[in-house]
Length: 117
Image 1 (cartoon, rainbow, N blue to C red):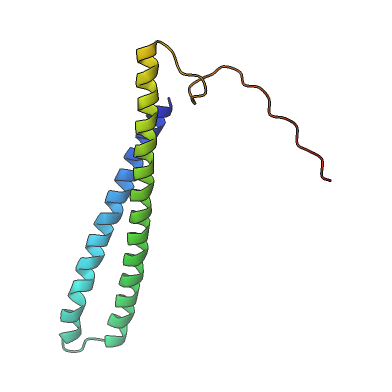
Image 2 (tube, rainbow, N blue to C red; image 1 turned 120 degrees about the horizontal axis):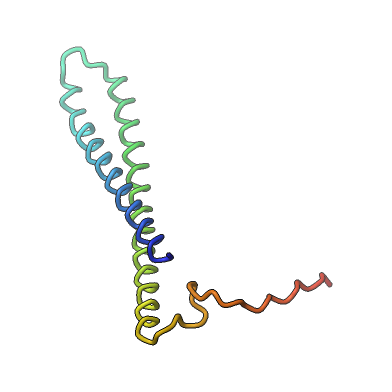
């Protein structure tokens, strides 16, 4: 169950990261067209300047979000590898090792909180 959840999370992060990379590519393309648009007769340089600011802001935001998704995916892949290692060990030994997230045995209750001094 944990493994399936991690795999689904990784699929979602990969998809969303791909969408953001597509958006970044589109924004880069739009940004690259701005110099030619500025040379057009009658071009409104103020409007083009505002458009450039918006494109750059969206590009920066999408780039930061894509980086965040890639970092989360890398951490998720490491966690998935650890879970798979534990599961392989459990299969090899014939049981789930104590203390793993898949171990459903009851645990001792934590001690009650101490009263303030």
